[in-house]
Image: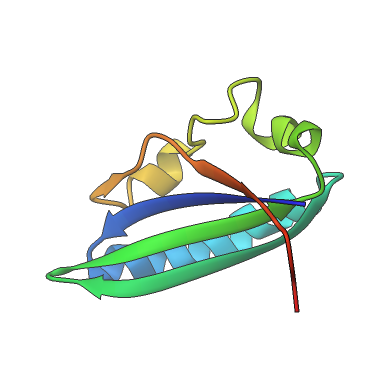
Length: 101
């Protein structure tokens, strides 16, 4: 399994809007994809902003490609989601899962 990690920053209101988007729009889309396992959205205060970190778990790189396209390292952020954020990382990080509990 592979965990795909992406981060962004938002105001408190933007972070609340993004959480709603993540739950009601993005998660249903991800759940419909073969090879998607789970997703976690984390938040932490960062001065006047909130840092959001999304972790999605996939069965394989091929499964990630069905979501992200050919370039696995480029973040996929829809314009609707981007409008809620002050900025976001243009790239993602992939890590292989070694142990789960």
